[in-house]
Length: 304
Image (cartoon, rainbow, N blue to C red; front, side):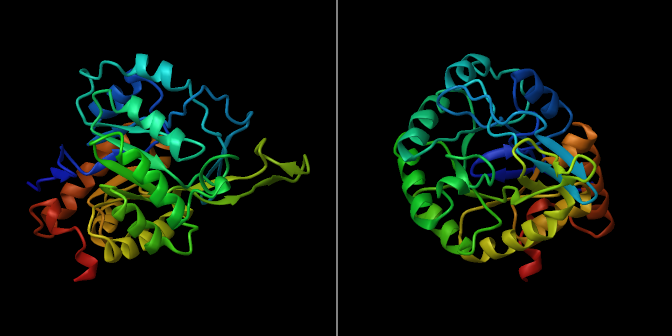
């Protein structure tokens, strides 16, 4: 039987599948449910310094090639998050805290407080394409900003730092290298692409209240895969391949492109947390049929 266990930045995981940020990680109970359903690690919804309402509804819609969303980092703020996630003892998989800020100082303030929790790592999404003041709309997805923010967070925590990058970035290799040089432990590749738009032709207006949103799901997968492939050749730290993974074959593709772990997001939104067990079983079945004993044998295989 294939061995799906893997280690990411010293974090032992039962399988390489990670619940991506922004999907279900709003409460301790939901993280527990995803972990018990088979996620090798789970990521909280991104937490900001102050509470945020985010964008008004509608914020999420499906289309024939995936999902478009403009949630706008709605979250209860760091104080409520510290109370909600103070005890993670019931979560059977490692927990990753996702934190956001409007500048390096704010990132560091939120990260320092969230790092007090029993979390395994801190993720820094510098790449949201649809929230003014954050991510790409705040200029955070450049090598210079990536270096500044990562350094600020590294100064306040010794825990692993995962920097989440944009598939839109032209200088993706430079951004990943800047994160590595500034103390990042891994690169999460990638965030949603776009922004994109869908119009209701009867209403004659965009469907999303914010009009545009990040594109995820099937449409993102080939782009994310290429980003993982390129980043793997650029840096020496691990990559968490994220974007459109919905089957065991998709996850194995990500590993072969160079990912050490594989984020799953839109598939969970569409199929529930049960997708983790299914994807893991499909991975194990393929590995058994193809004489692959361990996940490590697959990482970067497409480069050899």
